[in-house]
Every structure is written in structure tokens, then in C-alpha cells.
Amino acid sequence: METQKHTPRRCRSAGRVTAKPLFLWLAASFTMPAITAASWTDGWLNRANQAPIIAVPHPVTSEPQVPLSPSRQEHDFMLRHIFEHGTYQNPGLYRRLDIKPGDVIWAAAGEQDEKTRLGTLHARSTTTTIERLSDRRVSRMQSLYSLARLTGTSPTLDASEWTADEVCGPNVTDKETVVSLAKMAWNAYTAEPGTGEWQDETGRFNHSQGFGWEGDSLRGHIFADIDNSTIIINLKGTSPAVFDGAETTTNDKVNDNLFFGCCCGQGGHYLWHQVCDCMTAAFTCNSTCLVKAIRDENRYYAKSIELYGNVTELYPNSNIWLNGHSLGGSTSALLGLTFGLPVTTFEAPGDALAAARLGLPSPPDVHPSAPQTRKYTGAVHFGHTADPIFMGSCNAATSACTLGGYSMQTECHTGCVARYDTVEDKQWRVGAGYHKIRSVIHDVIEAYPNVPACIPDEECFDCFNWKYFNSNGSESTTTSSSSSTTATPTRTATCKTPGWWGCLDETTTSSSSSTSTSTSDLPTTSCVKYGWFGGCLETTTFSPTTSPMTATPARAPTVTTTRPLAEIRSITKPIPAQTSA
Image 1 (cartoon, one colour):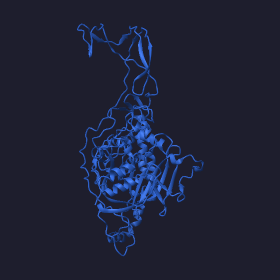
Image 2 (image 1 turned 90 degrees about the vertical axis):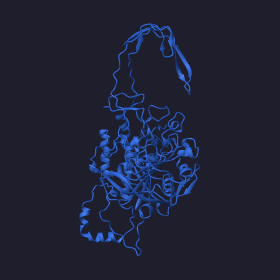
Image 3 (image 1 turned 90 degrees about the horizontal axis):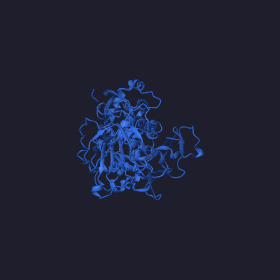
């Protein structure tokens, strides 16, 4: 069954009214109770997905407003709320700071506590096609997520449950809009001291004890336009501190290595922060163990669903956009895939691998292990080629990511990617210093005259050299010690003329045997201490003893190797670049 196609709707503001909706409302006034009775009655609804069948008219003004063209709609956004959701120490924590119209908001402008006042951010909207589930209630999506956690696989949904909708989203071909969204992703906003108080929505924690809840939470900045017709949820990105203890750095590192590491920080450099114990051999990872670690309830993705539910409770009839930088951008992309929302990210690491491991629902024509091949997601990822985190190359031994304990190994994005080629155009050298959102805004987005075309990333594939297998939990991991010997070939005669590629004696024969005997009495030298660059600093010498041993081949575990989707769908036509009007 083919995906349903809804009739395109105009991206109009809630305050714009024509005479037609008024007559429709008068004609259907006797049917309004039936429509109300048919509404969802869930205790925690995603009412943004319950667009009323007939709009309730607003008072008619003296001068009727003509709706603007969908590609030229204007919005002025202001910061309205800052949300905090506990993740690890206090998973039930939920606090909200409301920003009043007269409050003064500051945004960090530099490295030395320099601040600039945050004003109104202007953006334009347009319609975009998103393929998403018809029933997107928060309770239903949480049930699907719980099912994926229990079964370890993505839930199978019929094609009739999917629909292709024309939704209101940001105009990502407009430069001013992209700059405003990037400034929203700056995420270092503070209110004037004494102008706001945090509201504890849970009432179950004694925050006067000072356990540091700001360092143990998922943070979201909520922007709204003047009439609340469009709400933007901006999720906090990774804290820049290298060592643990600054703001949410420790939790960011855990989630970064879960989302963007091939085996959650294992199998690489010593400095990587290991957040699971799922590697069983070199470049071999227990997929069952890995999926369980990434789907734990206290991870950022689970909390982002709760935060989204709280926002839709405050604004049940508004359009929702998602936005974010770095880890916040990738988490926003995962949330957008879940609820079918427009997403804009900046310098976000590849999110396709995390989407596959989380078991997010996929349309029937998309393989769950290759979400990067999915079309019509509404996600646009902005980045430039000098940022190794965005490009998936920040994993060398001496890279800033490795020194900070981050395992950044993914490069595949869902949706489409808009790349600024700063390496070619500006002759920049690749470095993690270019990952900062301030540099991206001033030196890249504002510096380029046009917005780059957005191209799908369908043929990308992460962790191609790794093998993954499913298990029942009985397999040993890298922390348990085990020993086995394997059969090795031995020669029946001593080689007298050894060469580069083997023995050169014509009369020497070789055969394979499962029994080998050590007869050498020569001392053996072994290195016990290595230097930074691999050189041996200390050796020890010992003499082996003669001992026959029979080698028993070890039974190889069943290994399932992941590979790219065999039937790669044709690449979606790129979104052309457009100069802002």
C-alpha cells in the first residue's frame, strides 16, 4: 500500500483570517460537539498533531490581512522559556524558566565572558514535504520506543500508517533565516540577575541542597514568534570543556560516544571515554549489548521526547521546529525523525548510526539499518569541511576529540547536507577549533554570499570495518579473560635459504599439522614498556622450555556483518541554492 498524500496546506499564521473560514465555521456550528468528542483524550497529548478540522475564527479586523506567499512568510522570534530535564542523577527532574517580555537576555559573545544582548531574530518560512506517522502522539511514540528497547529491533509498521504532509518549516535557502537559526543554536543564554525564577514542575527534589542540577540535565531553549504560531525548540550542544566537571560535560561525553562511536568508545585510542563493555574482539562488537546501552532510559534521546511533550502541552496548536548545534543538533534530528518535524542543525556529527541503533520507525521502503536513505525527512544539516566533527574525521590519536575523550567516528547524516567548502574556498586547515558555533556564524554563514545546496547523504556508510553480531547475553566481553590455541602450519624440514616471501629451498616441503613442538633453546627478548611513539623503552629476556602442546581450534562465534543497503534508492534532487531576497 502506498503512502498517503495529504493535500498541501499553506504555511499561514494563526492570526491571519479570511472570510472563507468564517462561513465554514457558521455552516458547521452544529457539528462542533461531535468534532470535540472525537479528539484524543490522552493525559499527555501531542496536541500540535491534532490540527482542528475547522479553524475557530479570530475577530475580524478593520483591514483584512492577505496571507503572504508560503515562501515569503515572516516571523520574529524571541526567547520564551529555558527547560531543564534531569538525565542521570535525577531522571525525574523538570524545571522551567519563563522569560517575560521585559526581561533582558544576554548571549555569550566571546571566550572572556563577553556578552551581547539578545534581540529579535527574524526568519522566513515555507512549506516542505515530510513523510511521517499519522498517529504521532507522545504516548504512542514512547510505546514504540519502549517496544524497540525490549525487542532490540525497529517496530514494523504498515504503509497505511504513514502519510506525506506539507508542513510549515524554515526557509533554509534564505541566508537571513539560516543566520537567525544559527544564533538560536548558540545556546549560551542567561537572564539578567534577579529577573527570573526557575519553576519546579516535579516538586519531588530539594534543590536547596545544591546537587548541581544544571550540570545533570538536558537543556532546551524555546523560541516563539509574536502570535505563538511557530515554536522553535533548540537543544543544548556539547559543552566545550575537555575534562569532566564543567556544566554537562561528563554527560555530553557519554552521549557523544554512544551516538557517534562505532562501539561506544572501545576499540580505538586509550584516551577515549568508554561508556560500555560491548567489544568482544578487534573490530567486533556485540550489537545486543550496544543497543541496550544506547537505549537506556536516562539518555538524552529519551529525555528529548519528554521535553517535546512538555512544549506541546504549553503550545498545543503551534507549528514546531527543531534546531541545535553539535550534540544538540543530532539529538534534534533524532527527535525530528520520531515526530516528523522540520529540523535544522549546525556542525552536527552524523546521526544516521544512532537512528538505526535506537530503532526509530521507518517507512516500509526504507531499511531500518540505513536511515540515511530515507527521503522527505525535513532535516537539513549545515556544516563546513574544516570541521572534523561534522566531517567524521575527529578520531586521530592526536586530535582534540581524542585528547578530550570523545570517540567521534560517524559521518552519515539523515535528510540532506548543506556543506560550505571552507578548505577549498578559504584554504582552512582541518581543526576542531572551527567547530564552535560563534566561528561558524561570523566566519562561515555570514561570510558566504549564498546558502549552499542541500544534498542527500544516501550513499554514506559508517563503521565499514566493524563486525556486529546479536547475542543472548552469554558471550564474554573484553573484560573477561580467555585463552585458546589454534593450529598453525609447521615445516617437516629445516629451511637453509630463507627469502623475503618464504623458503627458497626446492627440496623443503611443508604441511599443516595440529601439533607443534618447541625445540629452540635460544633466549627470547620481549618489550615490556613502550614510549609515546611506539618505541621500546624497556626489554626483558627469558629462555623458553621445551614443551609439546596440542592445539585445539577454537570454536568461532556466530558473527553477522552489517553492510550497506543493497538497493540504494536514487538520490533526491538537490535543493538549489538561492540568494536571499
